[in-house]
Image (cartoon, rainbow, N blue to C red):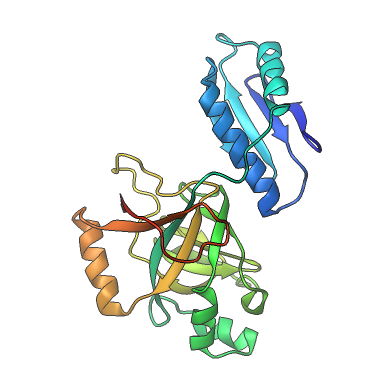
Length: 256
């Protein structure tokens, strides 16, 4: 595979470095490589962690040596990767925009020279690719934020941002999965938990999947929150094989 290098990262990790750019094409290659590695079920591989342009593989050297693993990965990377056929999973995430839920929505709109309604429409009209997870458990680094609503981070970060807050930081948007300090401009809040340590699968979404935000009012926010709290709410997941699929597809649920 072109523009790919296998590098040593400490005594229990190997890094596969892809073309050093943030793009859907590179992300698709990483996702296909992750899928292939997991299909191989190589003994000794402990974890596979995708990032923007690389893939970190943690392994147990008592089970497989560095040399053995590198040879396996070198052979794997020469195989044809299917970056097209995987179903595109789009998670529908409800957001209550503005007011106490999004105290910086006015600032975002003012910076963009738009109305708050236009900012909400723009923000909720995109399917955001999850490039990687990091910073906090379940925190998604999303790609695809419209340039019109790029907004600088706060000059003085907040000491505590509520879990579920949806914000913009520069050219990125995302969800705070738990209460945390942070400097992003807050435009809304979702009742959905992208991270819940008490859930059977704590992380709701993974790299290579997509998030679509849709607006809800406060009454709907509270209804969904009550369902999330009692364990009966299921996030709608749209599936489709075409990268530009915007609607339709089979509905699936995943507890939030």
